[in-house]
Image (cartoon, rainbow, N blue to C red):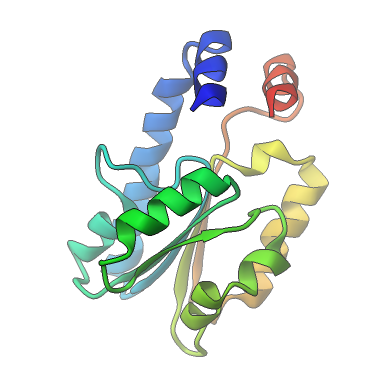
Length: 173
């Protein structure tokens, strides 16, 4: 939370971009569910929040039994989400770094979603801009290789990697 406040002070438009990205992620979830995808992984910044709608809510409007695993590298955020989702069947929270695909893919909650012939929608939201472009491409490719046939990957980023603002934002992390 402190980091979020510091980022907002340095970059006042960040909340607008975060909410726009969140709306995009919700549209992606609905789009994937309308195409029969019932398993979702939401990985990256601002994965699950008590205010506003979340990926599982958008997906479950179309497929009531949709399963969603939220992935966040921040221990406090992941643990808090895990507590909030504990009594919700088909929902889970995992603490792992999205930028380390092996770490994410080895989590039992993720492994359970990756059944053959059951496509998954992976939403890499607001996170790949924290890695150099080559690493971000390698991360995305690693997930693409691991997902079952028919899966979908959606990516959103906040800033181009050559922006002075991006350099300042990265330094804050």
